[in-house]
Image 1 (cartoon, rainbow, N blue to C red):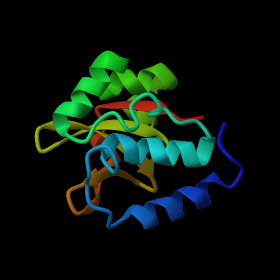
Image 2: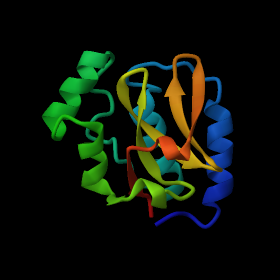
Image 3: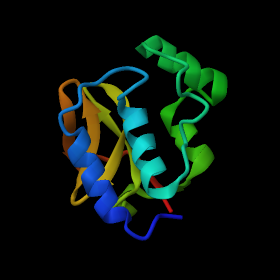
Image 4: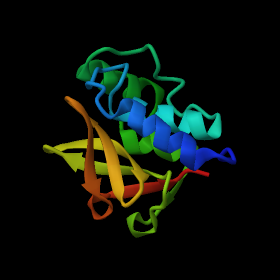
Length: 134
């Protein structure tokens, strides 16, 4: 369940990460979304993966060892999948960025995703899959 003041917390969180560089195992697409969820819901969907990888290959191995090997599978363990067109503020999404799948966070009319030099935004219509964060 989201905290009562979650929209403000989420806006502040996004602003605090706006220029954070992408670092595997610290500030990557999955941990950006998981950190936001932990902040607004007190639930850490990435708990099994934290501290388990520092590279792209390590991320894949951690997802494989503790889940089905996919970001979508990891999100589906914790949250209800919804149609991408039903994305709301504070929900999670799967997007494709430069040919790779990435986790993103819905806020405002955008999807926010961790990128090489900070957060990038995409249109909500870019969502391939989505999950309700309640």
